[in-house]
Length: 444
Image (cartoon, rainbow, N blue to C red; front, top):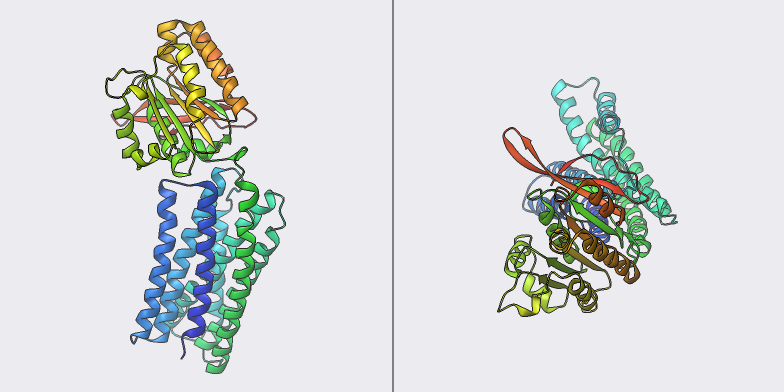
């Protein structure tokens, strides 16, 4: 049996899935575990090619069909989980009825196997079911991937959902056709010629569906990637799960010392730098060397980013060999530095991270600190810059904390929580302008 058509059809579909994953990654600049999920899709594609190589080295055609369908199903499942998770983080798609979906995916091929093999031995029924599930899942999961992305595109008010949904329906049709033909072939009702004709039809249908789907998914890059407005991810899953982030915005990160404020801000900076944004990090308690070390641990090429003008590090800790990075912790000096360094960032999307406003308020008084905060907020909004400011909410009375929170668009809170004798850092979105948040805590 010539493996060309089944090999080509699955290759076409997997290439389409790679395009979807690549587009979603580019749009939302995902990080963390999501990156590894995306990479697994690429690994699965390589495994599929190796399966084809095994066939050409002498393995039977049945082995190829089974393994290629099994690997393809795994790739589809990971791709679907990746897409659903990313889109749920930005609040566009919520995945419900998981149990029902799983039952449908497995119950349909089970019924088909029983229909075609009612008079066969139990082991034959089981093996047929196993083979038919692998192939059916490949097509049905592919159909659902395109359907979910199509729903997301529709939420953006775009006609791009039409080709995506059309692709999903065609994939579903191939899945049903696969069950019918495979069942009849395995039970001896269809000849080899019918089997060959099916694979030709499968290849044509998969080509048409994949081209339509790729055309639809590439169109979503136009409205989402606006520089001045839009939703971006912070790289902190607890925050992204709740709100994503409206750019530009002003956010206060409140919490006691040691609760993870600096860690959170460093992860935000690293994630946005990986997306090509420009970041100014101003620390009133860390040296430049400490900031560089922390960013390097998060995977940043600090030296390159500084040379390219994407990253500017400032500190109020005096150092004789790092004069160019020093800014006094005086409110007026910080205000001047804000304007000076932002104009040097080589990026359209810019972030100013101040860690933290608390030492200014301790050294120069609450009134001076609040005045500086309000001035930075006004300047960041006028310049279209995202401003994140850390603040120790236990250092001052509650009325001062309330004034800090009233000055910003949103508040992210961190805390230390003891679990089983160990301290864990937690984070939650406390408030965000025009966004309903749950107030749930997440591990940082």
